[in-house]
Image (tube, one colour):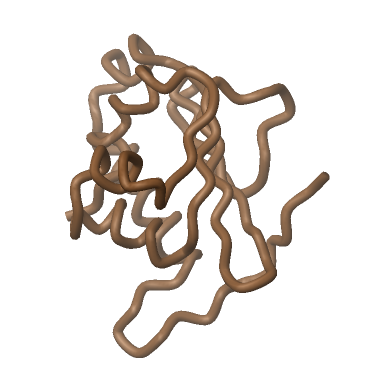
Amino acid sequence: MGANQSEISPGKGDPGKGDIVSRIKARLASVDKSKAQALGGVFLFNIIKGTSVYSWTLDLNNVCVYEGEPEDDPDSTFTLTEANFKTLVLGKEDARHVVQSGRCSVTGDVMRAMQLEPYIKLE
């Protein structure tokens, strides 16, 4: 079951999906690749906006980010609304609080997933 890959229109002054994923790609390019690979894993983000879902993948085994789902099953899957995703990656709220409050569902390797902040948090 594939995810909708259409662009989400940002609000005024509000970064859109494409911009956020591009910024996460740039963030990933600036991290220590050996540390990223040491954590490893493939992480799928399913972002919900209205009745649409778009997906993007953070692959720390290969230290890359791309839109869409991975070919193989991910180690962890995050499912959350676009608003909560922006809150999470833009650092407006602690990731643990977003998850613990039930605004983000995490399945798979939750312990590894909780170590992703340095790779997805934008400043």
